[in-house]
Amino acid sequence: MLPGLDPPEGEVSDFENPDRELYYISIATNVVTITVCSVLVSLRFLARYRLAHKIELDDVACLVGFILYIGNNGLCLLMLRFGGGLHQWNVPADWIPSYYKTVYATMVNYGPMAFATKAAILLFLTRVFSPYKNYCRGIYAFIVLMGIYYIIMLALKIFICVPISMFWGATTEGRCFNQRILILVDNVISLVSDLAVLLLPCPLTRGLQVGLKSKIKIGFVFGIGGIACIFSLFRLVLIINYGQSPDSTYHFVRINLTG
Image 1: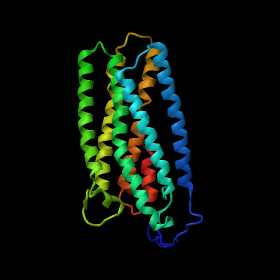
Image 2 (image 1 turned 135 degrees about the vertical axis):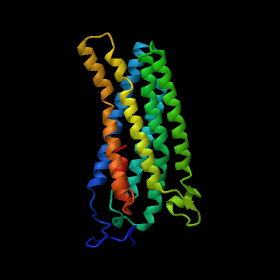
Image 3 (image 1 turned 90 degrees about the horizontal axis):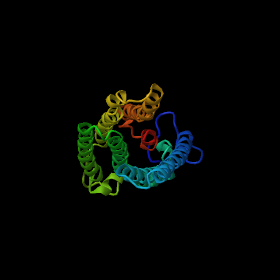
Image 4 (image 1 turned 60 degrees about the vertical axis):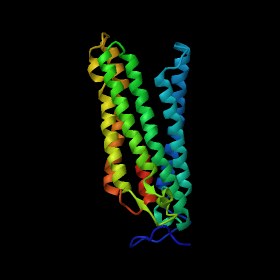
């Protein structure tokens, strides 16, 4: 049985007992995050139903983002079935095309998922700060700008190779964009938009006519989004350092985990 990549000097292919540390970390991370997010989103909609008895636009965006997120995690788990989380020299060569199909699917799914999630947060801000009309108009403009960007990036990712099947090696006749550059640019823009979403409410929360304790609570709620910025930055570092590594089944899973 041929390996998906020639092992580096000092390593030998091991299909029976490879190093599975990242493999198990990926399973645990996906299971935990699916569970936590499912509970939190359920609580959100339960609260909306009990307090308002209606669904707002930010709820719709939240639900779309959640569905795409579950799909993304499902694809991440499927990726492990075809060698994800293992060094590629420990993965049979005939698994590699199926592995790259899951990589392609996660790339296409990630943008709409991120946009829906950010739109949910921003649309929520327009309800919280609805008296500030100019502020809300600025948020709507930012959502439209992000939407245009994500549509363009989605098209580039869908047609990253022409024909598409060239991405997973079904043919060698065609052309492909540079996957590393595409993901790198996408991550830089994503980091900038994450920071914008984090900082947008800051000027107005300072002027709220509430007590200090309430301000601290509000600041904590909005500030928790800083976690996304930290992971986006970490993702960027991984792409710069390992984006061109031939050991894709290992390093792409590391990058993907930060999502």
